[in-house]
Image 1 (cartoon, helix red, strand yellow):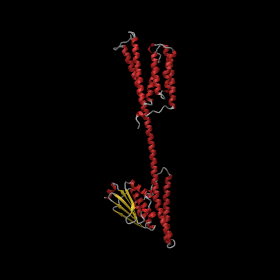
Image 2 (image 1 turned 180 degrees about the horizontal axis):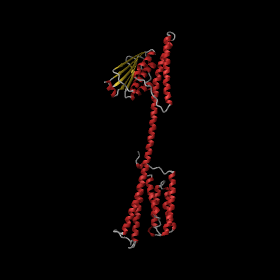
Image 3 (image 1 turned 90 degrees about the vertical axis):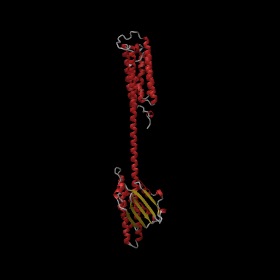
Image 4 (image 1 turned 180 degrees about the vertical axis):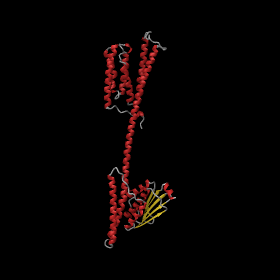
Length: 424
């Protein structure tokens, strides 16, 4: 995040500028009225009497710049301070509203100054100039004061010193508060901007997370569709070919094969309808098929119905598996079998599940033509999905030709400590 001095407060809004105009015009009118009242009773700084136009001109010059106190705070502060001191030098300055104007100008520079370092130095210089003029004014006044200038003074301190200390303390309070409140207003605006920025970042992060979740879910659905539909279509293709070959020689076998094709097609269509229907309902999560390792034997029954030899064996003591691990094992077997049916021209498929001390090993081998007929490397959708499933569970997968011929897929899925405890 940027440092405080790097942040620039946005300029005033149209409504704020309109409010500044109204407030400044009210102050100008009040200052002019106060000039007329002060002239009427003879109360002016240092007792000097100037012409009415000069009094009114200084009152206008010191208050009119307040119209732009938020849009151009530096210029307003410099002009207001210069006019304030010039009016006191001339002895023609209306003091009450002029003091309020210099207070507002210092505050506005603190609250709205664009360059923070320059804003601090400018306010310090103006305040120092004010105190410098106060010192000069008192030195000038001290030389012209008669000895009986304070006839009613009864305190323990010299009257002139007391008056000077009182003026200094009062100006310190006024200028100190104007500086402090200006800084406080700027810091409050900065904190509000940080909160707005953080809220926007959170909104963008939430939107990005939702978008990633949608993409992840769509990839998962695509993987499920591929696993389910590709398998059924591959089995249907083999059974249809078997039916075609047996049509003239063995009508019963052909009828059984076509029945299996019909069932496979119906299953594939049902899966498609289920998942596409869920996709149309944006507010409902898409549930994946829940087949697990307990369905592997049934999966191989369909392979046998297609005319292939399928062997299945389980080694070790079976333990309860979480749904994610069980489903991943089933999908790995399904994808490996599908690839054997589609690409390898295999006649035998051997599936083995091994429950080891720390992992579940899924081993699928065939006697087909090997890797030369498989989807290459990362290009196969099924192999990519298989690797993704295994990676999500922290496991490993190996694929490649067997030394005795054919192709093998071997995946290792880690067992969590609780599962190992059950196994022991």
